Image 1 (tube, rainbow, N blue to C red):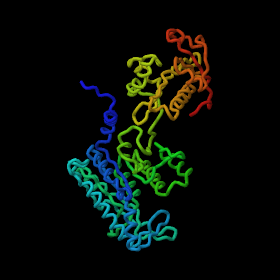
Image 2: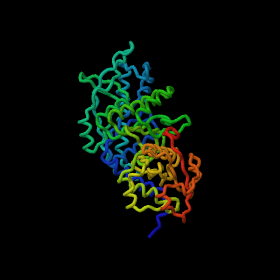
Image 3: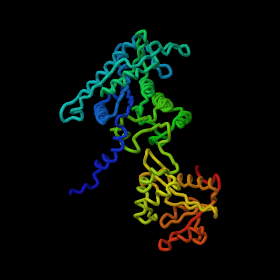
Image 4: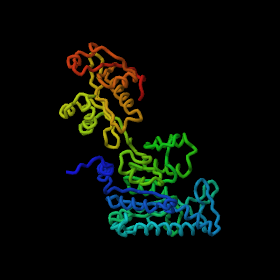
Length: 446
């Protein structure tokens, strides 16, 4: 038998399988700007979209057309007017909007139709369905400004879109809306995408934005937020660009409207869709209605994840080996950190109420997630649990992590000071050192 070795492709492909299963049959609304369509690398993005479609993901694509509109307006010498980030669409501008939206649609349909041999699209046979799915209304006059043919989404024809998706087509939605009186309105693609995602009860709304995406003060991608975090971030950082701000606000609106997960991704990053959807830590910012990572009391379903986390440390002799049967009986004593369905950290609390003490045991963090002070956060969680049970002193037995506990307020204690029940079980062959910490409300992080 040939040895598989450590081929990174095999490792990645195997690790992506849970996401392939999870995404199949789901509805994703993906919004991209006209800049993406005009980019030389747009074909690669089309290939990635085709791959998602082939994996059984139901795709609704909402495209913008701003650079294409502005190019046509310049050629015609038409005046470009924006107020509060919104285009004032007069008759001349509307003609350019119609022309540009049509051209972008044709470009996308043409690329989706590719199927030549030896190309990523070989054998794809993708059908694209576009139409008058959006009913719109005029913005009207705001603060004395008439926005003319610039409109707002009034209704999404979910029944028609669902029918096209069931037929196996990718649905393409332009930034146009139509009124019952036959008028055409220029719409913001982000607003169309948000309205479509909420109306369709989509599983995801994904916005491919220009620039690096949502980053912190050091230029690092902010990996996940809750809607209330978005509100605070926008208040604290008023200099975020209007376009990105609009997408962030739309993501929060989507979450509050029932879309469980919204993603903000830099479309310039190679393969960003695949990285975001098929790796645990993604490649952009995830905004979720409920926490992406949560610390909670363990359940019986967590036994396998905790065992997998503890096994390497037991092999190294850092922790005492526990059987599955024992862990199943004690799982209620464990706290776990769950990240997108994976147990990435755990710890157990064994109370000794007669002595007012509790043992901290099995504190373990997955090697890939030892940054961002997860161990400290889990320790704080256990300490809060202990206080809630009337425990005012925590102790731990360890052979190899003494400094970690000393740095977090623990002090060396005599083995004879352990609770009597624990002293009777003490393994003198391991010669574990004992450390304790006095607990007081507010003496540690939340």
